[in-house]
Length: 236
Image (tube, rainbow, N blue to C red; front, side, top):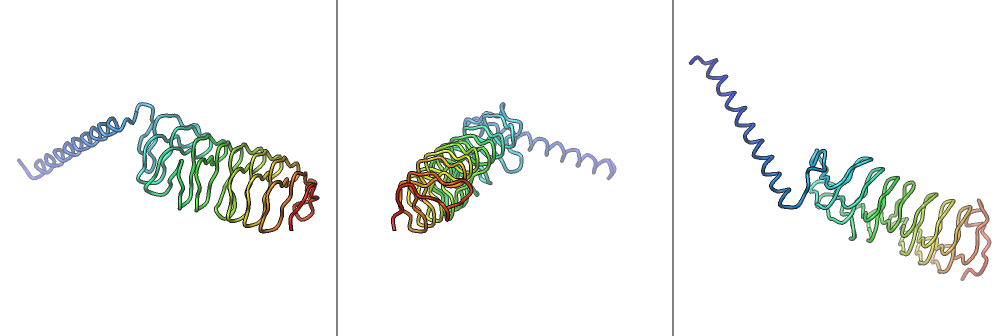
């Protein structure tokens, strides 16, 4: 056998060996997924680069469910029309999402979101804490700025039932303009509660160490906080 034929034969054997190894890898992956209870039949791609996706369709970008992801995202038990719906799992890479606190960025749980993020059931020292509601547009909560909970947001923010060390504590109401805030103290600026607001702010039922305490009244549309009329009382 000449050198050319011998080299060709070795290349062909190498190609066959690569195919055998790839087949073994696929079989091992299927066995592991079966062992962990992951259904691959409902998926277009289980692993394409970064994401583990399971048990659902993705009308927007990602539908991710019931598993951990060593890279970036762990997403569970929900559909997503916009970008991310994340629930019930931890992620060793970047994001811990669902029913926990997170020191990094996102805590997201138990809802769908038509815009970007729906976040539930936990505190976050990094950026976003959002709970028990859908978001029509885009909402964020930051340990510096916003905590959002328990409601829908036809305008921008519906925020409920938590304290915020930075700026806003908002609860128990809808908002047609910008901010509806309720039932909590704020060490930074605003505490707003128990009412709707057609213009900007409706503030009720708490004290605030920063600037404004406004209770049981409406705010004249467009005037902002520094020009509001207080219906009941503002403590010193």
